[in-house]
Picture 1 (cartoon, rainbow, N blue to C red):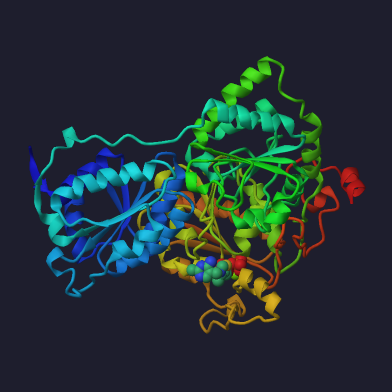
Picture 2 (picture 1 turned 135 degrees about the vertical axis):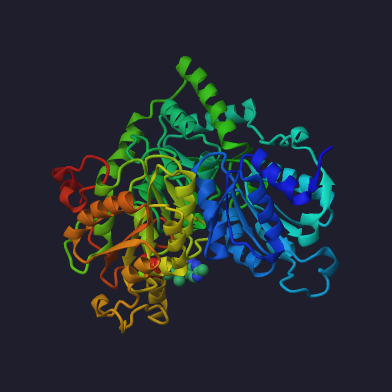
Length: 599
Ligand SMILES: Cc1ncc(C[n+]2csc(CCOP(=O)(O)OP(=O)(O)O)c2C)c(N)n1
Ligand SMILES: [Mg+2]
């Protein structure tokens, strides 16, 4: 049996498990890992500027391609604590990332050693496994178990904490005898599938709610196949957005309090049965449960048994991987189709489509400063179906969710549940590493952009070109809007007179200068007509300089974006689309007469 340092065995296992990229920040306690990484030479390392960003890069990397597992690395103490936010956001969205931290030597763990903190205990609630490995010979098993857990059942992150002496200790290890552990995925049984299809058949206005579990299972094609077979409209959740193309006849809109369309909510409220697959009834999707559940039955398919009944009791719960369930649904539905047992849904589908054509919000405003709705209209014009959007939180993300179009899985990459400010920029860099050919377009408010803005230097250093749309209202816009309920506008302004940049006119930070200072290119836009040319110019700059390009769009300072507390009380702050020209990039053939007729 070959003998080697435990950390060398760990690096070989990473490689064997498919890891080709890592994101991190070195420090004394993790230097043995870096030495092993360098010696092996099989894993490229991206040096983050903040350790939290390394974790979000790993998340972006995982979320881009089926089977990817992002790895983030940091030293002991503050590096681990910095990555907790990434672990939380990964756990919340069922995203596997592996976080590797250095640790003080085992003999000094209890001596309040420099940068010694019990990171495994801190990480426990936000990981599937968080462990400090105390025995060198257990290092291979810890990594083997980590990959097994990350891929089995509900995916999620793992943290492995390695004391300095454990990394350096010699163990016997042979990678040729190493085998990844089999992955465990529960699968729906035929009686469960039949029962669900019976309930679907008995309903008059059924819908499928398609969650992120479908994307995790790489089962978007099966979803569309099943929906088409049974001719049932689909409401994707925010995490499931892209599982069915926005322009598909059965795409019925997103439902929710914020990132939703008016027709999505209306379609959901008109339904009498919802089949949820790989979703978790998130509260910003359901809103108040009385409104959400009244008058309809529910089937819930989820890979994690403890998720069934967590938010409300479904009429039927099925524990299954989304892909396995959809395969079985397709097979059983085909049999019913052959036997002529599938009900005709065309009237209900047409009803949903009619709402999709007509229940629209206005995007076409010519105002200066620019109204945000216009930005998304121009983004729809500029960016094609292959664009991978990355966003996190704020009015920017919410309006993006309402107005942008997504056509493919993993093309709306969003920290859905945790919504940690600063996530967008590093996650976009992780997406670029995972798919260097992709057109990556990040969408941030000014504050989200500022949170981890230094990571632009990573994009410049490692030549990771992407386009960052920064919609600048010089406000913590979402929180300003939420403070209306308290009748305050307090601690939410980002405006000040910048003594170095009078041209930003009281909007405070000069994002163009900062981006340029960090080695990137940046453009500022003030008028609606300049948006498209700026996107064009940005693409040229990306191609020429191979660095991130920021397009900052100066918005009007106060714009309220549609939202509510219940699916039936979403407040509209702007006039709705009355004519096709009010929402020229909305999907569904807009017809002037039809619009006027409906209003
Ligand atoms: C770490 C963290 N702190 C606070 C919040 C709460 N929060 C959500 S959105 C937001 C303001 C976002 O401002 P900006 O990025 O400019 O977007 P806007 O709403 O103005 O479009 C804040 C403070 C958060 N999501 N994450
Ligand atoms: Mg803002």
